[in-house]
Length: 83
Image 1 (cartoon, rainbow, N blue to C red):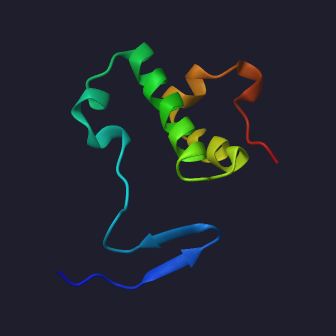
Image 2 (image 1 turned 180 degrees about the horizontal axis):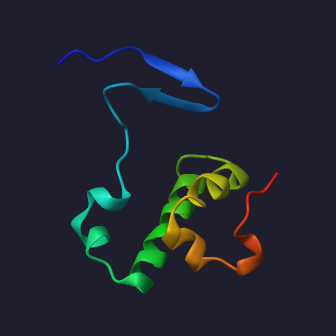
């Protein structure tokens, strides 16, 4: 398999043809989760991204706000981007 070179954007390394991690809806248990379980999966993803992948909490929060289950699982006063 031919894989393109890895490019840097900010503090994140990515490759156009290969992902080092997968998550979320790629797993059947996440796709089949009820509303409350989906919120837990979204909050766990936030934790994983911040701790394991060393993404700043602010950047992770702002990115995950695009996911309904994440917004629904956090306090109402946190449902806007952090600057």
